[in-house]
Length: 216
Image 1 (spheres, helix red, strand yellow):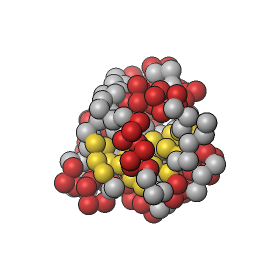
Image 2 (image 1 turned 45 degrees about the vertical axis):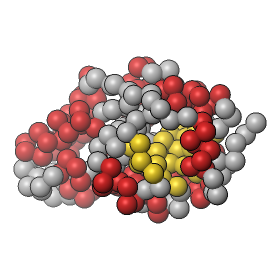
Image 3 (image 1 turned 180 degrees about the horizontal axis):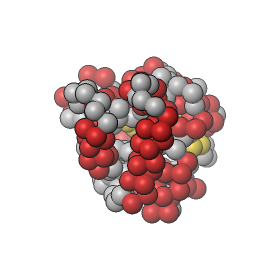
Image 4 (image 1 turned 180 degrees about the vertical axis):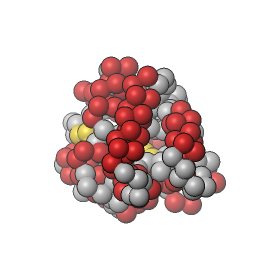
């Protein structure tokens, strides 16, 4: 039986606990490329590589941009990919309970190959929105509007699990109900801009999902 609420997940910081690992790369890249922006690694969280290049590297030549992309791809292909505690079991329980699930990520399809090789979760998702499929990345709502549409829902009928400010803003702009995951930002930062917050998925039940979904 199809549930009356669609559920959309960000990837990094929600399903997989990779944001601290990305911090290592982007802090170093910010120094090596002389970006000169305080907290650069935090500002770009949740955004696509094309958006990062357009916003922060527009004055760099094409060779430098290609080198940065290649460096990031190499980093992603070799980095550890731990799960956010309980996320895989939670996805499986939602699917078993009849929910339509979507993955909405600023990562590209190549990155997802690595993730799906590590965790056999591809078949759990009824929609997958990657960076190649959208023009305007987070904080624009396009990705969540597309994910909801592919699940067969209005975005107002969806729960979204997000960790980054850009991601939360994107989901809010789509008028979805957002549950903040405090892997990247603390509760005091996420609580004012989300419906509720969780630390991870270890103790999140189907009954809790029903309570979050009440009224949408």
